[in-house]
Length: 120
Image (cartoon, rainbow, N blue to C red; front, side, top):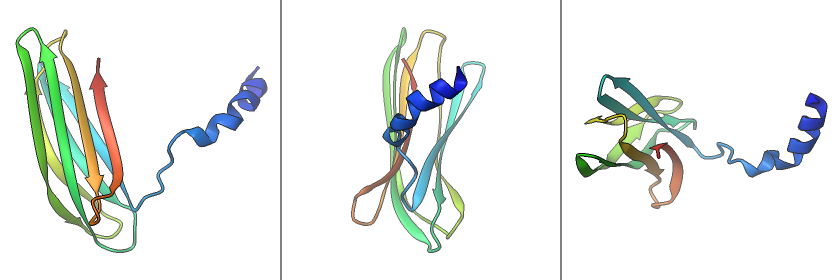
């Protein structure tokens, strides 16, 4: 059965995005009770220091209402190093819905990498 599944999925392998840019975005999330802490990272995969512009946008809705938070800035990440870009903490209940998007842009304002965390 597994060889057949492999044969069926092989043509689709190129459909998933592959990390091809000079950096990677990563969102880490840790929940402690009703607090959710989010940390955005940038991993520079190139051999040169890189200046990136980042945006971390959080939207939440639940019984208590809605909230929106946006953080952005510029950071230089050393070659082959990782850097913390932003950190945010929010209260989340069991029935709350939220979406967090981290986007990294180059000097030409071109999207380099992104990561998301969504709880529908």
